Image 1 (cartoon, rainbow over the protein chains, first blue to last red):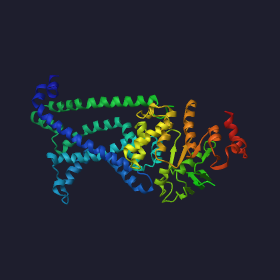
Image 2 (cartoon, chains in turn yellow, cyan; image 1 turned 30 degrees about the vertical axis):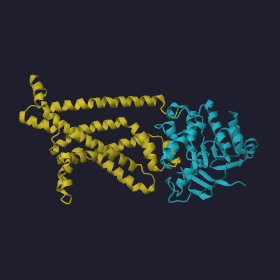
Image 3 (tube, rainbow over the protein chains, first blue to last red; image 1 turned 60 degrees about the horizontal axis):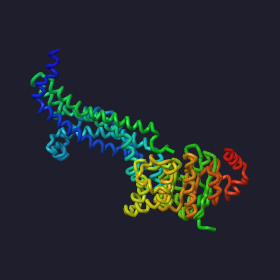
Length: 247
Length: 254
């Protein structure tokens, strides 16, 4: 038993390596922030493309749906490795883009951001779609009957309501995204997992990895609780009869 | 003969295999109130939705102020007319389920379209919206959200919202059907005032008294065609057609 505690939960060891692990975790958080903002925006873009009306936009809708299907099916880890090993070899791309080091972050950081955005953009698009489809048809009709074109109706009427409806599932995706950033450790980004692993291989003590896990728990638990609360509140609203049917 | 505001010629509309409108002709003069009656499924709501091109007809022509609004590329897409802007800014619509924007206050519901569609200055739009809401008796509800309002109040907001675009024609699609009985009157009163001010109105309704009192013309529809039309006293009190008699008998039995 002592051996287990020593291997995984050595408090003294954790304290000794705290700063290092925290630095790795800070990189994890930054990666998460970039990927979160970009995939929220990209996902919305995809969802809107998917909703374009009329025969004219059939090809756009088709390509968008194909994109979403493909990247929901491709494993994120595979995509990360594919991007990180493939893009640097594309000589026709200028080196500053091919091997980016923006904001003082190493290139694996940006390959990771790209892969996460591509994949989570597809996930987010599905979340937005659920929200858009949950807005009653009458809302679009009312907006159109007032002279708004599709774009304005989406922007001022549909999307604000859709986002309100899927806030909780969106937070869930963001939580999963945070955990999935750890996959970027395989392309040598010194985030929390790789940091812990390096420490482990030098000392044969796993407590630094456990410390990393604790840091995730500290950040994610409040987010998860918030999500639960939002879901409960939304259900309360539905149970009360919501907006329209009140006579 | 008064100036024609809206003229429908041989309107056909189908949803899949179901032909909902099978050749409807209708002439609405400026300032006229036309009440459309008929059993459910007779095509009356679809007819209204054709007029503002929410459901573009597949066949036939609609003239709004003499302008053919059915011309355009492709049909069945909801975008088939070149004249969408012309139509939507001249034709206001009020729905059975109100369809107020729940994430906006009462005032914002009314200001949104003039502000975002017509790009009018905020102050002007706001002043006008406030006046409209006062007119429908809701000046104390400006900053409320729709869910806090009764159905009758919501429907009056919806009327004010449509009026904010200065429509030439107003379409009412069973606007009192979702209301509790005691709230029907306040909405009908608002519509009476509107009619008295000379608004051209096309009203799908089950309110016989309203049709009799306010309607200049009553149209009875069944099976996607107009079965009978004329002055309210003629159609409602002395219908010629069997189908009209039967329908009125069933409605008045209630």
